[in-house]
Picture 1 (cartoon, rainbow, N blue to C red):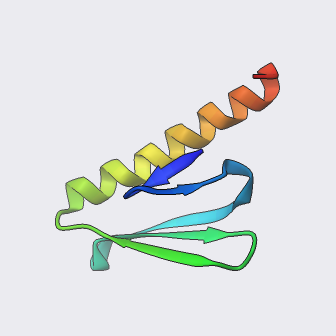
Picture 2: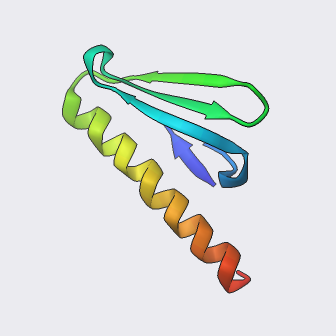
Length: 68
């Protein structure tokens, strides 16, 4: 499960995500067609959230391959 600002997504439902620097937001796109935009006060917060999504996806992929 991937969490962004307390909103949870199943890693398998995630289609893509985008770092929108000039708007200080992270956009998340699901395979269902739903889109979410998460706004941040600072670029550092935004960067941390974006990087956390990457780490969570890697961990979810590892769990899938390990049978966990």
